[in-house]
Length: 452
Image 1: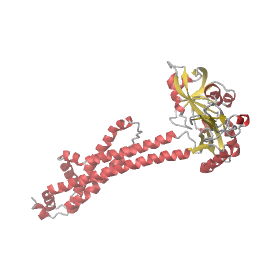
Image 2: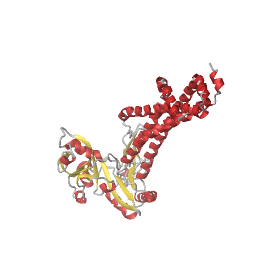
Image 3: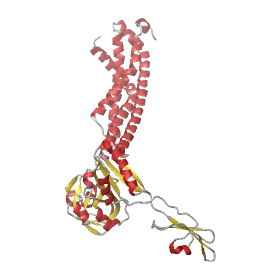
Image 4: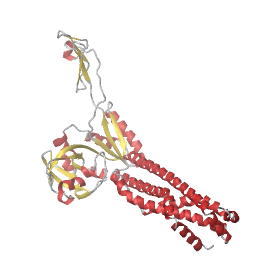
């Protein structure tokens, strides 16, 4: 039998049983939609990770301090109650003071001139010392730690901002940074220039706006340039606006931040109550671990009682990528399971179809059709049924994409994903349809014709 005649038989059988074809392919529909969404979500996740870290240098190392000083003195009152207080000066001793019920003081330990009056019968409770990292620490690390190409220090706070199209004061993230922060964080300017060393040294009231901040306050980057805003009721001149980044660097989101000189922020906004982050760049990304160890050693020599958090951008990138890959693997596993279920459904329906069409198979064989022709006919029916399911699955995935995006899941559909989804559908139908087709081709004509 010619292939055209086989295809005609396949078309007649499928067109006469449209509803059965659709029901048979439901499993393939779900599997096809799943595999396409898996690829789209996986691709979207990789793109999102890439965007989140595109302004992070692979050799960037962030350093911040943990803990706080809480050396204290505890008082023992007459009823045995204790009162504790902290001594901010580490050169002063700490202990407990026992106050008798009659107002007299007792004790034993001597504390300068107060030893004759106060006694200490307890021990101080001292926590890890909190250190406020400074620009001097930044310079020292650059000088004494080998393998560091550049270093900067930054901090962030929140302050009220007025000006532009704002009807009332709004709170924004204010980032105090140095002039090299833009190069270290790979920031790009949309208009104007970034902060300079002179701005920082002179504590000038100038600022650079993130892209989203500029749009919210002035409507556009062009209108924001060289305009004025008020931060904590002080006038600042906008010297530049960043390009849209959509990313996070050193804990600061560039799009939603207002960047001011480091020293300006300390003088006019935060005072000394800041918790800055040091960022150093390793010359060789393959030596990041070595540089981190050297930085930790240098800080331990300077601040023996403090604990520092040291993390590198590469580890953050790898963790985010690993998380995305785990999610993708989970979704792929689900798609495989759905395909298997759909393939089993096609197999069952074909077995029933072979049973129902036994006489037809006997007639075809009596007319001279070979086993290959019968095998090919039923195999093509299975493949076309799964192809219909795969096409419906692709259309379904296109329809549900907007719903998925409502939940802030990035979906990146592609033609290659659709083609791969169709291919998987056809392969699944062909694999699970082969055995029923093989059974049909092995039927004996006389037995098939006598089958009721």
